[in-house]
Length: 106
View 1 (tube, rainbow, N blue to C red):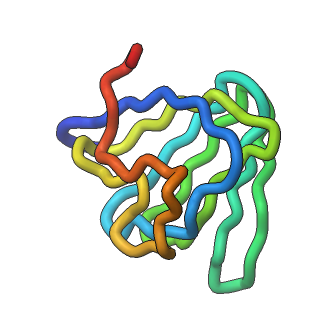
View 2: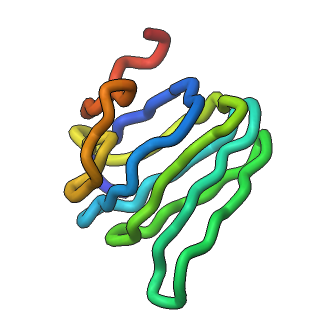
View 3: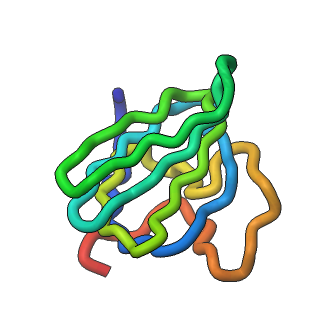
C-alpha cells in the first residue's frame, strides 16, 4: 500500500456485514482467538478460517464478511479513511461500529 495507512486493533465478536472495498485490499492479522472470513468470489462462496497468528489479505473488489463466533483480537492495515463497512454493503445493524478507524490503544 502506498500513502497513509490506518492500523486498527479491534476485538471482534459476532458477525460483520457483507461488504466490498472497491479500491483497497484489507489485511488481517489475528492476535488472539479465531477469525472467519467468508468470501464471495467468481468461483463461488468460501470461508477462510484464521487461527491466532494467521494473516490474510482480502483483495480489493472482493465481497467479504468477517466474523468471530467466540471473539478475536485482530490488527488490520488499510489506507487511512477506509470505512469499516466498505464502499458497498448490506444494511448496517446497530451493534456495528461503522467508522474510518480509531486510534490504537482506544
